[in-house]
Length: 205
Length: 233
Image: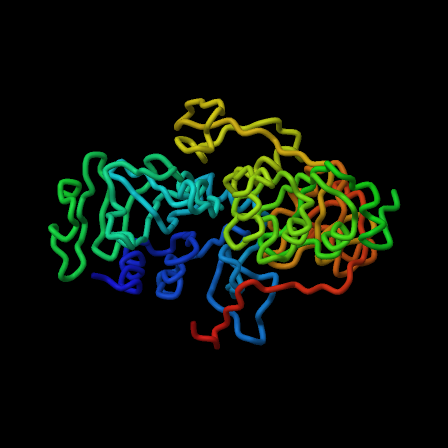
């Protein structure tokens, strides 16, 4: 099984050089930390920043410079700031090459659920619904099984959807997969993982 | 030129009454109108409709109004990190309409720009599409309508007495959109500057969208998650 760092490295490998990328909050933020500078990737943060670099030093930290996770950030000298409508215009208008988001469930149709569990947990969708419909490539990064051992990779999502038929690639701790409509195509399995470990192996091809 | 200068937050909100709809700029606690929110806390009002991405966070910002039970309806995109809102949403004290963040921004922008409605793919095939008109373009899209408000409360780094505004770094977020969408836009600034001091090329919000402006004070500028290169997580 892959660690979160190994999963993030798999995501890094899926991202093309010199592309523009939006990273969701939670696990996807690891991708920023492991992204080699030589890749020339421009990171977009939907609260209105293009050109996120990393973390500020204690002397340069600014309360007005944050990412979508409300964490302090630093930016490259060629970064730009803009309002939220322009920021989501970049997303909805197809100007962002990749978005990487966490997930609660993904199904073989490419449906994604990641914003609410009815009766239990509501965080809101934030920008996720816009991102999955706007970014050219949607990559989901999540554990393969939930805490109860139930697969988050399913035949049909049971939770309320974030987007219908929007997911291109899923990176889990068990491997890399692509929803194909009838199955998940196995692109790669983590070291030591076999198809049998995926449990419902009819879903995988 | 109309005089838009007010003395302080209290005088600038003289006509915000119970039942008003109120847009509030800021992303989390970044760029919120601290003085105006505090002044609203002092005022005996209720049944406010709040339109804000987060409705405050961690007990701060608009969450102060939630704690005082002044808000009965909220439009927002994210409630995570705001326990007051989650609690009052689950107890049905506040009627929350969750709006995808890009749709939220565009509905507000549309209101300010005179666009009545627009079709967007965001939310198609989800609970958000329920009851909305669907139309097939290159892809199926849903119809979303403009979102207006009686008042907007905005914080800018710099502003002049005409209401030209300049925002610092990522503090801009929803504020320029809300300034355009409200009937009355009230702005507090960290620096009230002379006319012409903000170079014309650098005006983020032209003053035509602003009705009232005042010099703010005692800014906290709270950081929600301080992360630095020195501090290893």
